[in-house]
Image 1 (cartoon, helix red, strand yellow):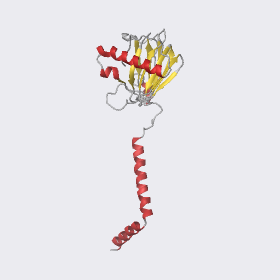
Image 2 (cartoon, one colour; image 1 turned 180 degrees about the horizontal axis):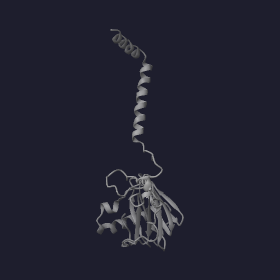
Image 3 (cartoon, helix red, strand yellow; image 1 turned 30 degrees about the vertical axis):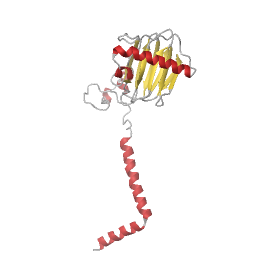
Image 4 (cartoon, helix red, strand yellow; image 1 turned 90 degrees about the vertical axis):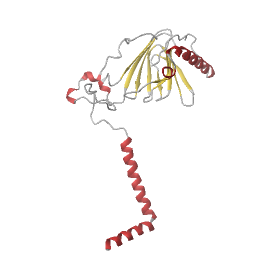
Length: 243
């Protein structure tokens, strides 16, 4: 009979001492949120490297790692972005994105890279990357590049060789060759699979694409004039692409 009596008395004392009850509730909430934070945080690598194991076919969020005994130097270098990209040049613009599927050393590092060859008058129509911020580095030529934020405010600039612009994650962005010669750029994404959402390709048939681009360029020129931004009169842009 002594145990029930002690329990009743202990409960009674706790109810009479609100500070003790509050401390207990605070402790429980702290443990709860600490566990929640651990469960949702990105996990760090437990190995130095994790090159992609291309012989595994299971569908997972990422790729399996190679056995450490099979890892070689070739896993960490790639020549896939060297020289002109061999592809259909219908739009005078070529884009090559390299991810961990093509470059094993990128696996688990949260990175991917691309090369873009912009012919004269070429344009990449507005698109976004839902899972990545893009760091755009211009290696050759002159390019007009910009993005639109969630307030529909336009940020744009003229890039010359050696210049860099960042396109924030998930925001619509674009670029066009504003010079008189081909332009070459390289981009780095802070995601192993950045993804692409293209308004032009998703909303319009190929036959209507030119109409969309014409409207986009007129709007771009209008916004440029309002912000005292000089739009290169050489840009005729008869060719474009949807990523």
